[in-house]
Amino acid sequence: MCGIIGCFGRGDETLDTLVHGLAKLEYRGYDSAGVALLGDEITVCKTAGEIADLRDALRSKSLSGHLGIGHTRWSTHGPPTDANAHPHLSERGSVAVVHNGIIENYQTLRDELTAAGRTFTSDTDTEVVPHLTEQGLDEGMEPEAAFRAAIERLEGSYAIAALIEGVNAIFAARNDSPLVVGIGSDGSTDDTTTGDGDQVFFLASDVPAFREFTADVVYLEDGEFARIDGTLAVTDRDGTPVSKSIHTVEWDAEETGKSGYDHFMLKEIHEQPRALRQCLRGRVNELTASVDVPDVDDISFVHPGGGRGKFSGVQFVACGTSYHAAMYATQLFHEAGVPAQAFLASEYATSPPPVGDNLVVGVSQSGETADTLSALREASSRGGQTLALTNTVGSTMNRECDHTLLIRSGPEIGVAATKTFAGQLATLNLLSLATAERPASRRSLVPALRELPGQVQQVLDESNAEAVAEHYADARSYFFIGRGYQYPVALEGALKLKEISYEHAEGFAAGELKHGPLALVDEETPVFALVVGDGEPARKTVGNIKEVEARDGPVVAVTDGRSDAGRYADHVLSIPESHPRTAAILGNVQLQLVAYHVANRLGRSIDRPRNLAKSVTVE
Ligand code: F6R
Image 1 (cartoon, protein in one colour):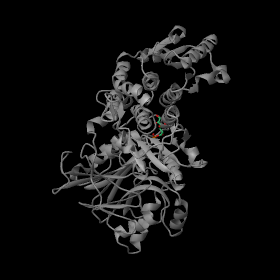
Image 2: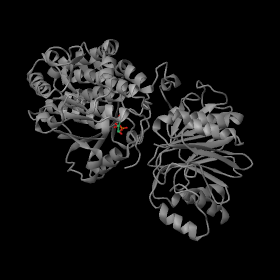
Image 3: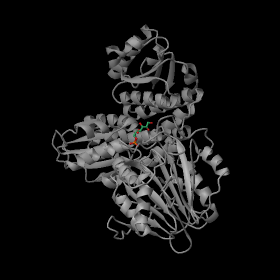
Image 4: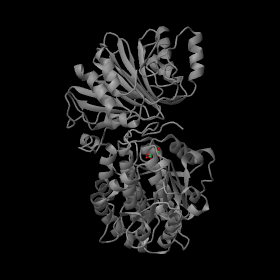
């Protein structure tokens, strides 16, 4: 989705800092980019295409100024063209604006401004903002008042940054779209304090845009305005100053580079052992088989066999990969005797079920997904208690929900969710263990969780997924099947493959294959079967493998070798023996690698697949 960067205080480095910041935001997905600098006047350069195209365009354009704003656009109103790229200028060019989100009443405002004689040069909803601001200036308002008055007219979601000619400042406002201010010292260090001295300010939709310059950040809230003019002043809608805390982000700039990997996705797949260690650190104690998660200390569930608790059940709301994590989570709670349901967030928001005294958990790596936010707000408005299970401190979900449980995976740059899915599954286990489960299940699961990072490393070290991917890279279609905890992983395996390889892939509950999809299986349809343990679910899934074989479908078994799945499979992707819950994470690593290598062989844009964005902030 769109990205915003602003920079104040880097002198001649301003333009480079803006373009560099935009490159750091590429992972959000975009189709055009642009920058504006404020010197004696506002100068703009913007273009459809990639950051490389913007750099080319800048070679033939002279921009000057010591403060500026930049943007990567992901089209919502009008196609990706130079004219539709941000920043957008007002009639006389005295105001420049970049914007993330959607202005719902833009057509009314546009009609009104057009009738007043203002000429629009783009199809965007954003362009109403510079025109409205300039209209205020023309009516004699002070610049800041004109900006605030323009924002007050907007309905919808926005993170906005603006430059106004004649004022040495960046103005910003947010509603339903993230915006964060970074505060550093002059120079390029991040070991600065935020005290006296020449300060440098950054404004961005996401911290990686400026992380190499500073770790000190201030998160803006909905309804807040910021003015950056050598100091940071934050005010509410009425203009009352708001006192803000400075947070320190805990990950370093290194973690947002590729560290020698060809793609962020591959790097992030390989970061899973570390991400899982971070997730579990201090939260599980193997000696005492106990779980210590203070964030959820006041959450407990009513148990059928007695035991008083605050909540009778749990409703999960999520989208895409996070929805698969939510499906997995329902099984954890069912095993603990707690009713649980997983909802696609968009459907929950469309047709909300009774909340009752359920805890409503939003599962979201970004914490900004509009559909999930909408579902959580719906639940809240009906009196439900909400919990955000997210990777992003300071995200809207983190701030709006009653409780937050962090998955601690570190920044994820590749559009395809990988390490954050592993982190979600591990953290959901912690949630169920800490709030719902009995000591017996803790005794078997805690050691399995502790072993998990090492086992993931083993899978990464020994995987033959690249050879398997090579073998099947020309398949017509890919199927994935699994039962129980392996079923959401089958869905996830298919989603990962389709989103980055653009090939057709479907996941099914193993038992469902014979109820329809089997009709599509032939020698060009490899079926990846997740088979764990040697119990009833494994035996039944082996039966499904045989059904595939009988239709000449090639089979790849993802298995711990305890069943005879391998005997009937054409290829095997091995995982170490473990608990069925952690086996799901191990099997998923193999499927992530298959997806990656198929996509790589087909030459796809792995980190930024077409039509997709990292953070989906529109419904
Ligand atoms: C797939 C993927 C998406 C996200 C979905 C929800 O790889 O990343 O399906 O899982 O858009 O995003 P979050 O988790 O940020 O709410």
